[in-house]
Image (cartoon, rainbow, N blue to C red; front, top):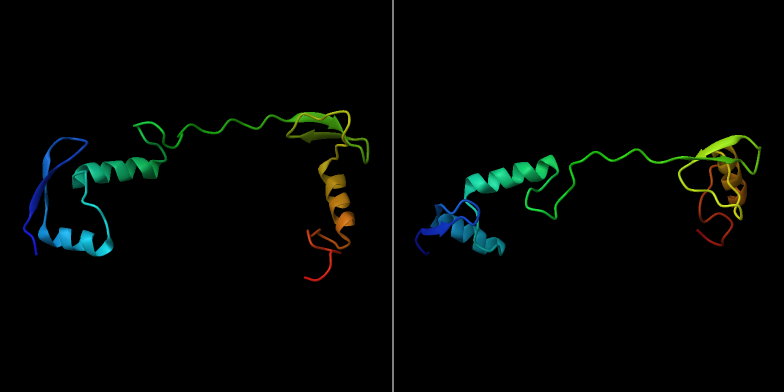
Length: 121
């Protein structure tokens, strides 16, 4: 068993102890030696759990913008439908009711199902 080591934290630059017991544990799990002290590891973990990284390339903590909706005339019933895409003149657009009815009718069973009518299950 090797003795305790003093490592330098890559974030704060302070020395921290990497004990013989920790070295054995890390080696038994195939981990590399730590590069941050326990305080900096805890701070980084808390930052990650909040959903953002301050050092770039991480998660974006800004709330998502509301989805833009477009109005279209339903090809099934003629009512006005709100859809999350820009409708084009060459493809039919359906309100949610007509869409669900068509999806159920196209599968051959109520509630839909992608494998209905296509051989064995």
